[in-house]
Amino acid sequence: MTVKAEMEEVEKNKVRIKVEVPAEEVSRAIDRAFRDIAREVFVPGFRRGRVPRRVLQARLGMEPVYEEVKQSNLPDYYREALEQLDLEPIAEPEIDLEEIEIEEGKPLSFQAVVEVKPRVELTGYKGVVVERPEEEVTEEEVQRALDNLRERFAQLEVASGKTLSDGDYALIDFEGTVNGQPFEGGSAKDFMLEVGSENIWPEFNQELRGKRKGDILDVKVKMPEQFPDPEMAGKIASFKVLVKEVKVKKLPEADDDFAKEASKFDTIQELKEDIRGRLQEMKSERARESVRLQVLRKLADGLEVEVPRRMVDEYVQRRRRDLEARLATRGIALESYLKAVNYTEKRMEEEFGEEAERLIRNELVLDAVVRAEGLEVSDEELEKEIERRADMLGLKPETLRSAIQEREGLEDLRVDLLRDKALRLLGEHAVFADEGEGQSPAQTGSADHGEEEEGGEASASAGAGASGGEGEEATPRE
Image 1 (cartoon, helix red, strand yellow):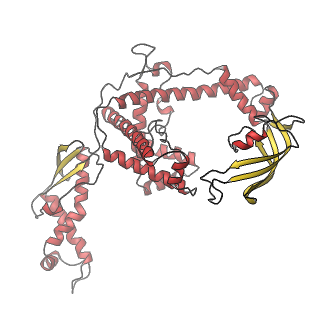
Image 2 (image 1 turned 60 degrees about the vertical axis):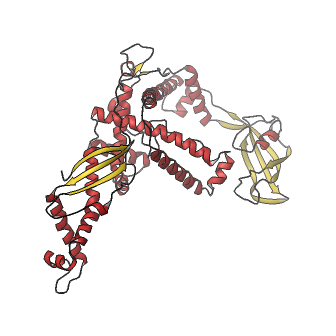
Image 3 (image 1 turned 180 degrees about the vertical axis):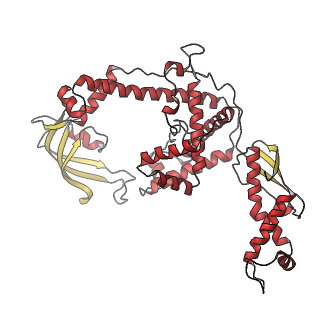
C-alpha cells in the first residue's frame, strides 16, 4: 500500500478525500522525476539521460522536479485512494495543485473533492415475493409454430378468376411519375407484392383489393414529407399499375411427408413434440428472466437513493449521440427523424432520462448484491465469456479479446458478469406469491440453473444500455 486515505462527506454524493503519501514513496517519486527530466534536458559535457542529479539540481532547482512529481504521480496516488475507499467517481476531481507542498524526506498530503456514485446497502433481497410467470405450452402455440413452419414451405399458385384480398399475392407492372416525370425506383416489371402488407403504401392496398388479373389501376400516392429525395418530398406520385396475375399461398399438408421434408423426423407427431419441447425451453427461460426482473424492479423501486443528475445527463447525451450516429449512417438528421415520428427533443430527452434513472437504480441494486455476497468472476469465467461472444459474432476469441483490451473494456466485461451473477442469485431466492412462504422458483423449476446459463443476458450497466431485460430503447425508435 502506497498511500493512506480517508474521506468525509461534503454533500450528497460528494466527498472530500484526504490522501497522505509516505516520505519513502515521496523520495522514490523524486528520484524518478530526476531520471525523467535527465532524459529531456541537454547539459553540455553529459550525454542525454546521464546527467547526475546534483548537476540537474544545481542548474534547475527543485521546483521543476516537484512539478514533475505532481504531474506524474498524483493520478496514481488518487486512483489508489479511490480503490482503498471503494469509491466510484462520476466526475473529474477538484484538486488544488498550488496548495500541494512537496519536500524530500517528508510525507506528501493533498485533498480531492469529487462527486461519486451512490452506494447502497441492501437487505431483504432474498425471499422477494413475485408473481408466477406462465410456463405451460398450449396446443394453440404448438399449432401456430407448426403453421409458421408450413409457411416457410408454402408455394404460390395461380388463382384464375380470383379477386385480390388481404394475404393474396399480386404480380404487377407499374410505372410511377411525379408531375408527369418518371423518378428513380418508381417503375418495375413483374413485381410481386402481398396485398395487405404494411411494407407497401396503403394506397396500393386500397386499390388492389377486389381487383383481378388484367385490371389496370391508377394509384395516387402522397410521398412522405421526409422522403430522401427533397424534390419529391410531399408531392403526389401517380402510378399506372397492371395486374398480371393473382396468386394464393398454398401451405403443405401437416402430415408425415411434410415432417420428413421439413425436419429430421419421420412423423408429424414427432415434429410436434419437438416443437413443444423447444417452446417449453423458451417459455421456461422467459419465466426465469421474468422472475429475476420482477425482483430487480421491486428492489430498485424501493431504493431510498437520489440518482445524481450528472449520471442521468451523461446517459442522455450518450443515448442521443448513439441515435444521431445510427441515423447518420442512413443519411437522416435527428431533427428530421423526430419530426417524422412526431417527437420533440424535449420529449426524447425526458424519456431517455427516465430510462437512465431506471437503469442506474438497477445497477445500484446489483452492485449491492455483489458486495453483500462477495461475488467474484475468475479469469477462466472471463475467458469463457469472451469465447462465447466471439462464437456468436463469428470471430476468433483472440481477435475479440484484443479488441476489448484496446478499448480497455476487460474490467467492464468483468463487472457485467458480476451483475449477471447477482441477477441470477436474486431469481434463485425469489418466492412465488401463490405458493406460500418458502416456495422459491428454484424449487418449482422457474429459477436459474447456475452454470447452465452463461452470463451476458441481463447486465444492468447504464453505460452499456442494458438493464436485465428492461433496457429497451426509450421511444423514439429507429
